[in-house]
Length: 179
Image (tube, rainbow, N blue to C red; front, top):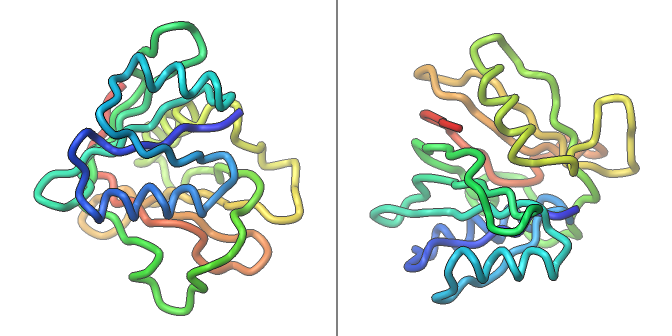
């Protein structure tokens, strides 16, 4: 199972870098350069890549604004979730993180940091699909996805390398969500 990550039709360079950072976080994310393809064609590409989910990253005024998640496992893609971002922090903006390294194997969605982020946690679990690794199982190196309540009441989702404890992907500052 994989997740096909692509940008909107007219992406900003920051949105492209964000998609590359997601692909570098785990082998489960497959970055596809969209071009002018529509959602139906993306679903066909997802099936060819053995991906059950499609994440489309939209930008506005150069900043990543939304991530729209679709289920592509059953014929035509159906909308699952949408996350509204206040901002994202890319890997290159974090100090002490090596820029080039092999992607980690899987993703472990860690338990929510507080009750305030349980809704986002359950929606992210659905958006990631069956690709998430349960807490009990442990691979050699995984990207642990933590969700906590950050400053200003924003949910903060960030990837951490399970073996080194270093950041393993971008940080998402989620302002709102819907299913």
